[in-house]
Length: 137
Image: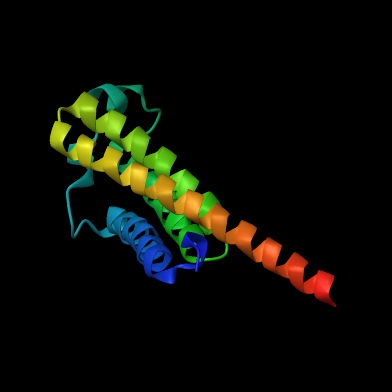
């Protein structure tokens, strides 16, 4: 069995990077987990053409979309988007002075990158398997 075939690695990553953005995105509308606007850097907030609340709603929609992508057949693309999104969040958190949370999000970005690369390996393995089956027929 290759790493690309190992569901014990792929599925937990896929669930984590699918469900966490999905739930965090939904919470941007309900505010049960956090006061999300408190994490918005004043520097970034000053550059926005909309209110922080409206911006957080847009952030929620993006996070929901990324979570759904990771949980469906677009896991690779969703994981790359999650990685980039987490880096942008970390930059905002650094500007806001939340260094500990920024470091955590950078580590999570590495995990999202790992999921994206593993998804690529799985897709490549599936293509090779299909090609072998076609050659046998």
